[in-house]
Image 1 (cartoon, rainbow, N blue to C red):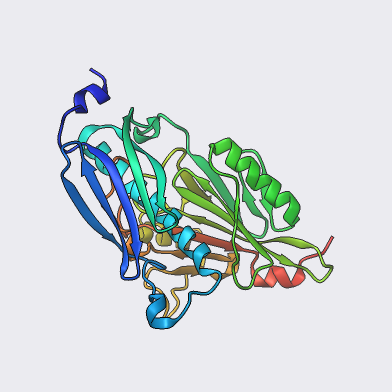
Image 2 (cartoon, rainbow, N blue to C red; image 1 turned 135 degrees about the vertical axis):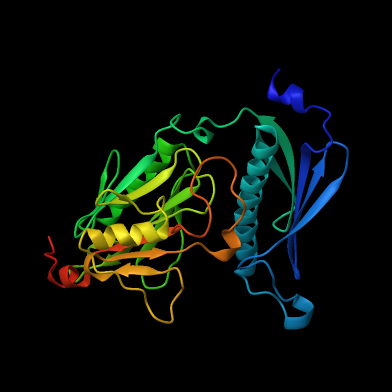
Length: 309
């Protein structure tokens, strides 16, 4: 019997999802096949705002901010719902979204699909990014080096998106950098920031890989340095392995409790955002004991001596 047939008529199978944003916050309502509803309030940056009545007209950029928040929350709701459905029924829940009152009100129709092959260990090869101190990152089909010009970097990111069957690279403003663009890899994200050198040429300056706790999507993003899986091994093991390889570990005082730095090679590791600590479903890294992000830059000592070509 197919998954759709096995789940048909079961009152707990989700049929619709409602997402709505109001000044006091965003929430979603999951409606099952029998019409029963379950509401969840959604927290996070940008999910609350002051009403125009209290603070005056919203600035011109606020509509875009709401649209970006809604997009991020639709993605989050879809991930959490499909994880819950997989854990309960062994199926994926695909959501087709429709705007009811864009950008603050959305309705999604839920259909069940066969489980993603990447849910099962060994079925889908991970997407491995290897960090090389002083050089940059090696990807399966391309290199992203600190000497890479911005135009070539953006072309490489577009190739990653095509390879991983995800949306084209997304540009966003990030203070301190000339440009910043990112692309999804499974449920992770690879981001590049650039800076302009004294010769006026814009080059890669920072490489960042992020991944929330839980199942990592298809394909799974992995970040490796000296054979260490930075986001897969428990954080304590990562620190111990890096020390064993001769790296000096620094934990900044007054910083985030999950932050670890290796200044000599330009590596910073960050623990997960507490808002992303949802119960995982299926295989994959889980829980706050693993790092959720890695930032990689040209070490300052080398950056000062970098030859401009």
